[in-house]
Length: 276
Ligand code: DGL
Image (cartoon, rainbow, N blue to C red; front, top):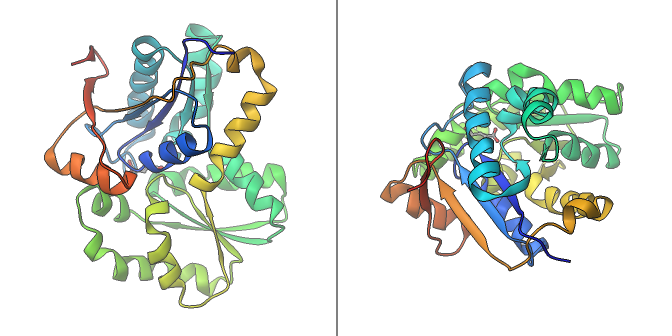
């Protein structure tokens, strides 16, 4: 059955394009609207209040202007600063029939299935300081140890065409996790799947598995839709993907095509005033 509602994907910047593409490839019939808040990226060094306010504006826009009934909050930092409060207060009060799905718990479920007892996390500063991964992990299994490494320089480099500077910085971030003898590393940021090969190189042969959300979230979403036919039946299935950003530059357009792996056309919107 097909309806008119869309699946939204929200990220602070362009990194969420990777998860959007993975969802599109896994669920090719569904219409998807991606919104990257390029006007306010990076979220990773911002206060909780600022990330919450940006997340509310973006998701309200997806609900009101793009007819999204279900939004994947792909941005890990927003998961830490805004997800629970938005689910408990914002949705309950304003949009009781809509859903916001996070990425932290599905990622940890996957990690748990691997039965690893020492897990590393690479994430933004705000994400690491929030302890959300640790808290959620210990609800699943209190015996697993999490070793978190904050990586404040990675997103600014990726968003600003600075990949050529990544390797020495990544070595510095990955080294403590190797020393901690982790068995796997969660890539806890939308942008990091782009760095998989660089991270593997930085691991220098160590037997450590990478846990990457672009490989996890699409299947979890399909499972969710199977369990919620009342939502699935109302989703439109015309194979369209719309890519929206809140600020546009030539560099963003170029980076978006590099991240997406094919030529894409971004559309600039104002989350306060609708599509421009
Ligand atoms: N998208 C954010 C995340 O997944 C990181 C990028 C940022 O700092 O805005 O954590």
